[in-house]
Image (cartoon, rainbow, N blue to C red):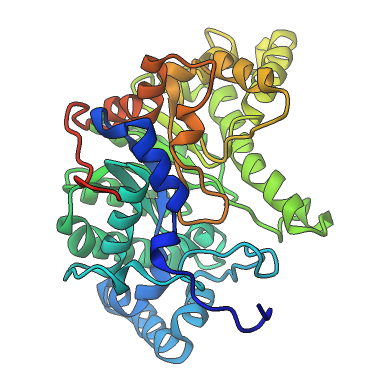
Length: 405
């Protein structure tokens, strides 16, 4: 097959292994929740921009959409150009070279809803938490007002147009974290909207999470009882990352570093003690970094406790009170390393399954189900039970399509 002329892969072959795994492992008798899946909002800028409040920014956004199309508009609006994820075309992402589920499914709902539900049924997933993709780096935009305007427009479009079409799809509201006052307004606007199970901060940004400006935000989220998530990404323009000459390098370090920085500030500055009822979730950083940070912070804290006067226990103890998503779960040839990681983070009670579908490094539920050191109860908790408890979902309601064949 030519590098430049590849035929489209039949939709029935897409996620074929995932579909077979789901049927073989019998997910039908318990709930599976995916706490991190994505759609490509850049396909819908023409629908999202009208939700912006009238003014110069809306006029600018409308002109970008008219002139730039999906990809061009996305780069113009978010200020970031995404790329390098297909490994020279050898790893094929959703929407490229695959025949679309919409080709075979007759459904009047929004295409992103249809695509998401189809993928969920292939993998055996009951509920999914949907996030945007290009907007994950919107926190780097040099104009704070752009992040605020696009975040509000996107969340209004998502909650009014997509989520009402099927209650298997949920979201955590994108917070324009660079503006604390507008972030608080977003919490109040969306806290009771159906389908909203929490709030999300994109971790690629340069704001200190412990700044007192965010105290009203954290207090308001704590009052809702819903989680606050920090969703990782990468930033190749970060000064330290500019030394890396390969995408594999920046992807390996970027997704972990941004969450490590925010978590360190969160713990050392005593936010777990100031907001003990606030559920915090860390998304898409994998798991290998957590034992490292536990050991590192504990060691430093024991030598310099005076610099963290609000803490009443070790940093690692606060980390074990938090939630973590599983993807991308590092599978090392030393299986004991992963088992120890699960023990250190209290995985049966604190880990939540996530796919990150349709991104190139997504994980299917079998990556959790097939772990030999987990018993059935732990598998079910990680695959769905913990998320149901954190998000307030009914764990007794299995919502899979009757057939995934």
